[in-house]
Length: 256
Ligand SMILES: NC(=O)c1ccc[n+]([C@@H]2O[C@H](COP(=O)([O-])OP(=O)(O)OC[C@H]3O[C@@H](n4cnc5c(N)ncnc54)[C@H](OP(=O)(O)O)[C@@H]3O)[C@@H](O)[C@H]2O)c1
Image (cartoon, rainbow, N blue to C red; front, side):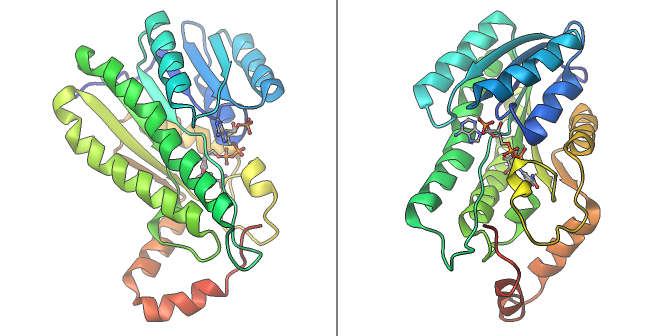
């Protein structure tokens, strides 16, 4: 297994906002090439400008992560431009069940973006990295992926899927020299959490989250879970019988 401690060619999905934008800014430096994507042109332009001001070469693309063919051709193009050292599958959406239950269409779109969007990002990257026997993939899951949450069923389940998939890929891709990290943040300030009206324990800024992720990716940590009190809270929830935790969790505030 090998990876670049100081990656020079980095691709980030969902770089137009929140954690992805903060990661782009954190990695931006002279000699670094950034391939950034999102759906919103204005936000993406704003982050690209900030990264260029820090000396990075930036290729920004408005593209939906659910576009399989478009993602393959964009990632192939970026890899041909500058062989990718690090690919961060970060784009994601959430919504909860505040109106009693998640609508079916909303549920399907969460799975589509959070699960298929990750596959559409990492598979072209795996194809590019395999022959080189080097590279690093980072999949942004969530602490919410440690337990199915009645307040956000599709979100927590989609994050559980990518968390387990990333853990499994890490072993599978050892032979190919590709390192896989799964990132599980707790609550981070972003457009995703801006709509939450309930208290968010241990809420942290996107810049602080990006700093933690960057430091731990440089050490090739297989799982990057923070902040630790949220991890322990989820571990306790996992350890307790569901007959105890279901009534408690179903009374927690739901995400709008
Ligand atoms: N904030 C938290 O508390 C928290 C905690 C744990 C995990 N996470 C995860 O962290 C990741 C980033 O979330 P965030 O908190 O930074 O939220 P955010 O501010 O809403 O950013 C989400 C990013 O994903 C992009 N995106 C969403 N759907 C997309 C699609 N279909 N195609 C392409 N890009 C798409 C957005 O692009 P646009 O600008 O075009 O909308 C935006 O750049 C997500 O995977 C999220 O689940 C967040």
